[in-house]
Length: 169
Image (cartoon, rainbow, N blue to C red; front, side):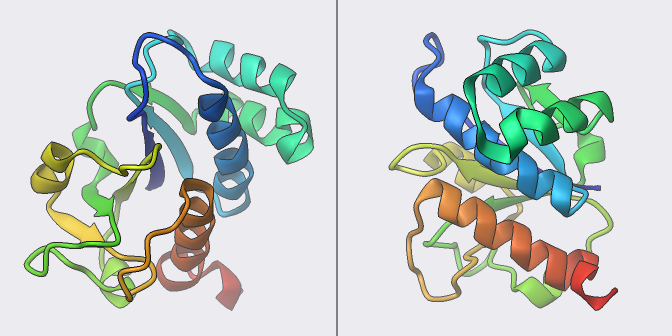
C-alpha cells in the first residue's frame, strides 16, 4: 500500500480554500496511480464520504471531484489523526533531508508499504514530524523546495515509475 499523506499545517480550527484545492489536486494523482490518499489533522470533517462530497461540490479538478469520490468509495481515502502502523514506512518529504535519514528513489522500491508525508503550507512539515520520520526524501535530489501541488505531482510520478512500476506495463 502506497499512501500520499497531506499534513495540515494551516489552522486546525478553520477550513481554508487551500485545503479544498490541495485535496482536489491530489485525488486524481492517487486514483491514477492506485495510491491511497490520507489526510492528517483535518478535524473539520468526520467522515471520508462527507469530505469527498464537499470537495467534489467545490471543484472542477479531477472531473468535478469524481476521482476523490472514487477513492472514498473504494476505501482509499483516509481521515487520520496519527499514522496507523499498517500504512508502512513513514517517509517525510523535504528539500532539506537529514543525511542519516535520506533515501533515494531506488531504495523506495524495497518498501512493501509506505506513507509519504507532504506538508501543506509554506513551511512544509513541522520539525517534530521530520525528526520522528524514519526516512526523508528530497524528490528533486538537489535541495529544491517545491510548491505543495508541484511536490505532490512529482512524488506521485516518481513513485509510479520507481516503486510501483506502472510505466513498465
